[in-house]
Length: 90
Image (tube, rainbow, N blue to C red; front, top):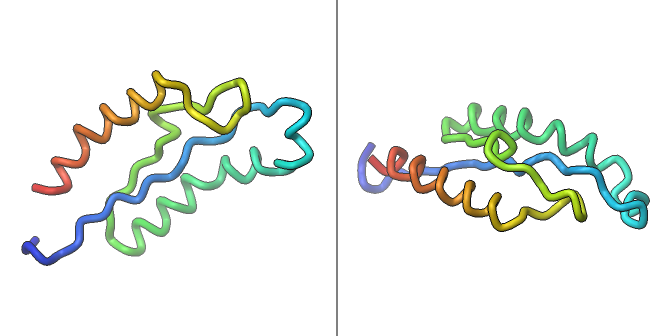
């Protein structure tokens, strides 16, 4: 790989978790759709010849709102990226 080639890591988000009752109507069907994202992202990455990471294999969304990550999940994600990115840049 030369210095002008782009090095890309496509990251699929983790699946959504259970949502509070008051948010379920707003996010109707979102949890089911989120289960398909990693497969779709991976397919795109493969077709483009770029790197892929399924964040759902590393982290989980919280159980408060089902969407966001808690501090420990952010830490895990950052630590994982700190190991993966150097291998992409080699």
